[in-house]
Image (cartoon, rainbow, N blue to C red; front, side, top):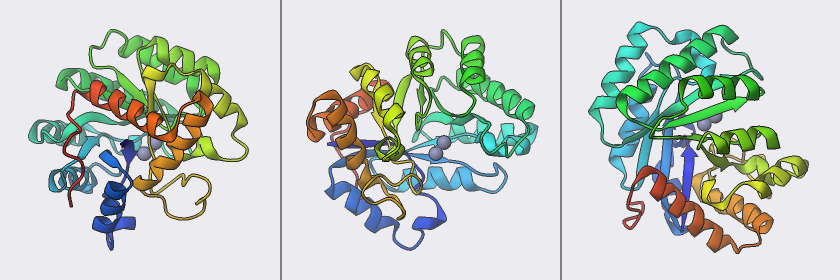
Amino acid sequence: MFVDSHAHVDGEEYEADREEVLERAREAGVRAILNVGTGDPESGSLERAVEVAEKYRGVYAAVGVHPHDARLFDDGAERRLSRLLEQSARIIALGEIGLDYHYDNSPRDVQREVFRRQLRMARAADLPVIIHSREADEETVKILREDWAGSSKGGVMHCFGGSGKMMSEAVELGLMISFAGNVTFKKAEELRAVARQVPLERLFIETDCPYLTPVPFRGRRNEPARVVDVARCLAELHGLTTDEMGVLTANNFARFFDLELSGGITT
Ligand SMILES: [Zn+2]
Ligand SMILES: [Zn+2]
């Protein structure tokens, strides 16, 4: 059994064959998918992510304004997001939120402010957070220390790509560490060395599909069934079988979000 802790299956990329994609995930042993809504908060994309979670059993939702779109976050967006958080029991986290200094699609000071505002919203809504941090390790940790430490709900460092230092600081902050297909890439030796050091009870696996397709399928559209390839890579690093890594990370997910995984995905 596996859980894909971070996917974007509500996207246009799956418009033509979403049910087949979910069916393949089910056949691969994927019991749950956390579908993360991103995009312009006024475009309806967050609502669309929740609709997919409400339609399929085993699919849950997280919604938040991605650092790429931080410049679009205003009082109206905050009200819309708050309303959505109240409306659906399928929403189990606020995210993905954080800092992306690689693309810099929004000004950095705006990204920081919007990250802090959404951490406050998560606290008010009593939800855990999904954190996206790219080339912004130090400031992500600084903001989390100031605005999130002591939260009872915790958070997930998704698509972890940082240093060993960043990983230890995230673990110290009580966060889960989630690895995606980039950990399987040929040149990712350093990241694999970091992945080997993560305490087993803090590990999550994800696809971040449609992006980051793991080896040996790199270059094609990614999908939740491929989370098995991420599990295989992490299993080798920790001296476990792929199935053992699947069960371990699925149990971590169920414990963290306080969910039952028995039902699985139905389309
Ligand atoms: Zn992300
Ligand atoms: Zn994502």
